[in-house]
Length: 452
Ligand SMILES: [Zn+2]
Image (tube, rainbow, N blue to C red):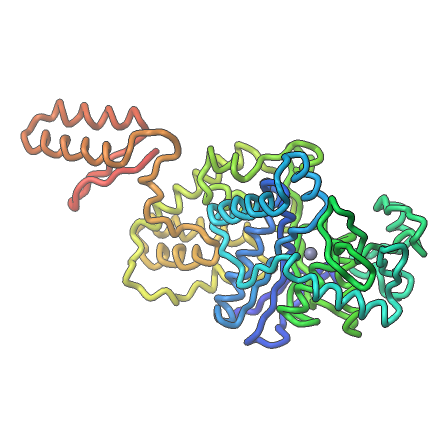
């Protein structure tokens, strides 16, 4: 079996992935806070870690991998947005989760094995917070419970920051009830306008970080294989998850490997809600196919910044056309488990997707010369990338173009004209379709067509 190496943020090195139990591989990724539609920057981790999980399933067997991606459905941004829109928090969450699932589906992202919602795990969070208080890592002050960062000697290990640097860099909230300015909230009080639950510290709600510690612990165990997320989550979110989970469970490690994807940028600046330079996935999908956006999100190395532009999308579409044309000769009766080691090797080298695409382009050139095995390798590997599986790629409309039915009808008329030796009419129909970017491919088996 090809060995998988991943860059571990914790060790700052590429290292061999060696599962705790190869029959129970656990992967956790932080999911969306459901107050608004996701943008293309939010979609990058979804797509990248979907490929990682598909790869793990191919290497270790689908039944041996458990992928957990949560939904954060309690957050002050949700409260604020529901109030602005004058709808209930429950309705806002339901609507946003539905849209999120549609977007993920359109991008070819498979559903995780478990998709826990934070509000369904309040008991687990309260239990974990109680444990942290009992062990002396957290304290209760004015209805808040805070984690005392100075009690944990290794705090800051993931981000490599000292506590002083954190205070300087992260605009930590100064509050009179904090023992140390870097202490972070595990629980905070709620009033009648904010959602809340009864707890030993009064009516309140959890902080964001404790959610992921409680949910990953419940479904994957206190220590598991891989924790994934965007680069912007390293500090404070992931640093604090590690602090909570390690201190509650007496462990020196939460996940063995931490993988982080790079930012999506627009003209060199990070795509973000706060800068307003974002494209929602829904808006991108109105103009481009999901697979084109997915290709675009995979074409750059996952740890490098990815500049999202019309040029990148056009290039992705042109490359997909090329690969779909090359796979046209694939033999559908060939077993799926063919040797694709030349493609797995770069993917297993810290998900080197640019290396995979270079190898795929070579195979496409061979397939174009009639090499059926090369075409089948592209299709087989495409299943791990979530690409090249659409049998209707060349026949679906990108916009309000001429329908497939209308094209087929014109082809039938043209065939009749040719049978009648009325070549003027036959040519006329071909030109008419060409004007609408429909290309006809005549062969002994009949006439096929493609959108240009
Ligand atoms: Zn998280």
